[in-house]
Length: 211
Image (cartoon, rainbow, N blue to C red; front, side, top):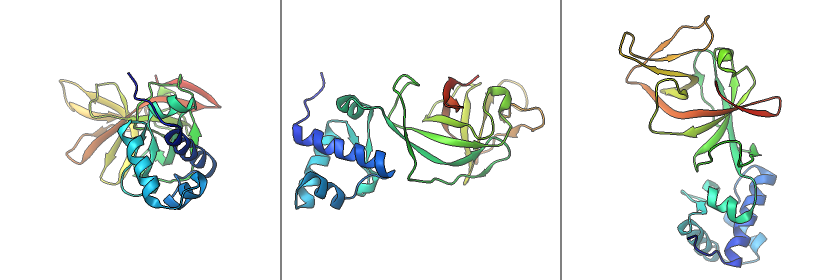
């Protein structure tokens, strides 16, 4: 059974939603004070703590780290706001640059919504046979467990790439496979980390599952 949310808590949650939607950034304490009509940061902190306990909001260090959880969107009856990070490659790995300030609304029927999902723009053509083209935007879900055949976001130090994860009982055993024959497999090393699964691809304003 969902815990009830008070009118004041819902009002602050709505302020956070609209601020992110309109500016691309979570509000500061000052922004929340002004929009809620209160004078002290403590009033905001108390409400944020209650929203966090209700599991409708996640807060790390600082007000700018606020993010609304799936239950929060459900209570607001709003489409989820998904952060779009920087450009990663579907060619040779390149430095992953996280950029704030660009968020999109995402219909809840696009994918299995979890709290840790985000968007990445693809640069490169190494995944074209999986239906991921240069310039596409992919929906990524952070994950800890992966199966052979998953299309993943992988990191090697500060570099990132999107490839198909392969694990099999013959050499090279574990590797990252491009879906374009002109690119070579990337062998798995201790430096490689799998960070998320690619769930869907946005191409020409149409969401579709990955192949």
